[in-house]
Image 1: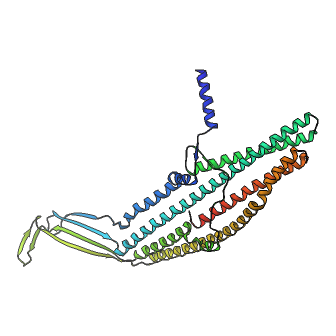
Image 2 (image 1 turned 180 degrees about the vertical axis):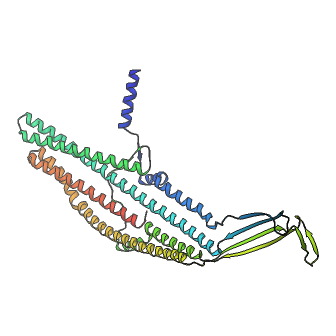
Image 3 (image 1 turned 60 degrees about the horizontal axis):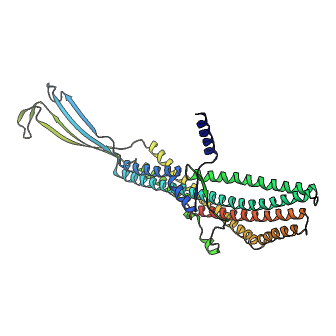
Length: 417
């Protein structure tokens, strides 16, 4: 039993330190899973569903009133009865406007759903490409680690044979330690983005991606293309437009409340005792003789101050939403222009590194290794060459990632997913 318990404990610890990992082959699969599982998407869909359900309440009539009266109406006999039914409702224009308001709220909820969807897709893209960048950087660091391991081995061997001094040996050990620390730090950041993707798609398993070397996202960067990029299609701008529409409909509903309410009624009652027929003949009515009639009433607002204040407040609320729409449109347009300028700069940096710095780094790495092995350079120059090559390679990957992240931001701003 003790041995079995020990095995279970070991298995439990192993399961905690090595969680299940689900590997995705492409970005589209992760986005599709996120759109299905993300709780924010689910909540926004339920909110839209709720607004659709509330649309039926736009024709909400007050409760129908039923009345029963019993007592003395026509004579000393106190067995008269009176039955009545009445219904009050607002002027029909009020219900028409309220129905339009319900439709506007549904549309606003749908636009909000698109905002959340657009934001989620951008977050997934950003985390995916960031993870791709970090995994590519990890490969570069591991390649550099292999080179420094060979350098350490050679330095230790040269020290033992008396061909070098202790400084070269210490330098080799320090450089290897530095690169191994960098690998561990980068692995920790990789784990953080894996967890971020796991959270975004609401998965029970850690999320990883199967990718090669980091690639640049494709984009049309012609001036004509950039001129067509507008924030008018931005989901957040569209949502604020729908808010303006809702406030307009709310103002119409408040104004329609100024119209008179209408009451329709019907009654049926008895007049037990002496009476006359329609032609004036005296008669005696009993409880079986029934008299009916209808009722029409209008409820007209006489005190306007409260209604006028509500109408004024509704109109101010509409102006407020219009100001917010203008502000968010200008803000998004500025962000888009800034992102486009950043993208041009990123593209220039990439072109320079791709055509000049990156080939030089490969040449520097290859020549440094050859020259050190053949004794043409000392270890100090060798280490400088390795570090310079590593800096260029990782910097290039950083520029690719920065370009991709900027393009993702532009896609989000223009809702071009």
